[in-house]
Image (tube, rainbow, N blue to C red; front, side):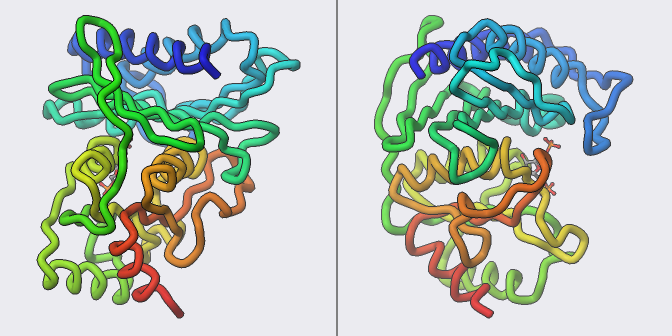
Length: 279
Ligand code: AHG
């Protein structure tokens, strides 16, 4: 696992440089779900593929930008799912973006997720690595990642970040969000799940959700690359991640690009969700 952590750090430094080069133009290709890829998406994907392709303990890799699993070493132990540059369309408007990793064993399922990580590229480059026990925050200083703290959520927070569009929210979701605002929660939503979730984790609590909605009953965010990795980080930080009622890490995965409704938060915020979604 140490060599995977080192590879994550090396990839982060290289992707930071790619972002700083400033080419946020579109490429001629689209990914497996039909989104037009930016040149940044493709370049970041290639960096991770190159770096992880050299690690003997890595058996397979799969990218959010691709529709196939690639085998690196048939005898390797770990399976890596990654989103090379989540929220890349925000680079253009100078908002933070991120990279997400899920480190699995045996197969790409939530119950076999062993570790996860994400990087936020913003005014600072922050890295959170979770070994399945503790979620640790590091910050890039003089080209080295320096440990800052273990992330621990408070029992409740102040922020609500919720995706999709109100036009498509189900009434019980809208009522839950309204109730939270009436109780004093503040809205925080940039449109990038990495900085939005990072804010909730580092500030100690709140609720991020991307619910099932009338246009997307299974939500938008992908289990392997986005939902499961953050679920582990939230659970290890003393919060949780559910699909409305159940632990999202127990959700079934039939296809590598499956999505799931998801709610990440501290304990009190998840009570709002289970009450709203009960029945
Ligand atoms: P993309 O990688 O296509 O830019 O999508 C970003 C994701 C995620 O980071 C964010 O939370 C969500 O899409 C925002 O979607 P909505 O605009 O539908 O809320």
